[in-house]
Image (cartoon, rainbow, N blue to C red):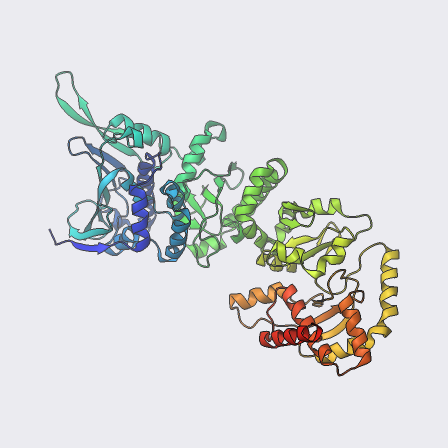
Length: 637
């Protein structure tokens, strides 16, 4: 046998192994589910690849998973006749965690800290192979990729290193041998050399696997002679082919964990059969937790696509729109060709029909949760709300279904989110617009000068704090004939018609009185503001900056800068003054007394800086602002 090469696990894998070995997670049975699930995936891949390359079968068309125990040596071996792995694949899949996930896993490991939370991380990062170390002191993997003559043996005690060597293996596929720890019932480690225990675990967690899971059982005859007998432990009937009335909640949950590699329970299950000219079965799940890479560019997601029980695509992104990429499950269509290419799949009219029906079914389920199970819907929104919002711009056909599902914070309640429909029902008599404000946080928006008048007059304001809200607003402009109106854009008039006319009349009467100050500020701040005007928007602040109705909001400008998506356009603001504020009143008097007053120049700089800080923007010249503030304080103290 060739000499072994010893390699070190990457840091994240080493930490995961440490947590796994010392795990407090009590349901250690699930290691078998994870290994059988991986074996099933390997069989799926071989079955699909052999459709176009029959030589991969090597004359053996058996697709099966075998379990063997050795009571004397306390070993448990799980073997499959699947696709197998090359040396490079072993190192990539077993020795490391995908590079795209390493930084995130490190962060989550630091956050979790406790070994009790290890199950959460395993499920989210799809590294269930390592669960074997919960029950084994050593794990040995032998594999040969279908179509190759090279076999590889991988071995580790989970101590930070692993060895890898060339070996011999007659049959394709992978065998994993666990050198089991002694049974320890107090710590959840059962005797996994016991046939009854293995049978019960497979029945509970893997009964739906589409391939036979065969246990080689030792049978003792009456004359004390021993013989070995193959026993198939699972029913093999795909769960999605069964009637929903025949499937228990536990079976749905176990299949979800198999198909998603998530160890948490799903939030909701959607199971139906479409009949007619084009038939298919669909079993979909809404997860209860978002995957760590939900918003990562390039992350691969999608439903499993089957044709007559043969998986033809593991992650089919064409079955649901991108904003529903977090959904998990399978679709089995009778009329799809087994060897369909991804390009042909995108053009297949059957797929477009499935996509339309699935999308409608999912959105209807969201609505049912929203209307009837508010706690579950809040969980859905907390985990996936940002993704669902993407649908407002991306899915024109279903926009009217998506908008009522949106939830926002608002000035109405410091704790509860609100739908736009509920907002409209609470609108004041005569109110014609849905008021909103964008900003990075609730605190920033609540302390913004822009919402002072709305708060003073008792108008509710929606708080849009997610960067994606800015994109939503490009497509979501009205609801039930009520236009959306930003309190930070353009001019705003609140109150009854009589109150609006009175406010306009009052401002007009003060325009002449404040004209010299307005012209002074317009000239002094010309590099930063395009207009200075009086406003009834403010009640306690001296001034604020607003943009025109169709310009980017300050929040969107900042988001574009931060994303590095090219040069974000910067618009000069309109400065609005509160003529009733003591500072503005004093500035008016000083300007009338002396247009060259140095204190007035400093006051103008400070007024601009304070207005920029209030909207969350950076100062154009922090040193200049500090100097003006210091000089101004020195003059008035």
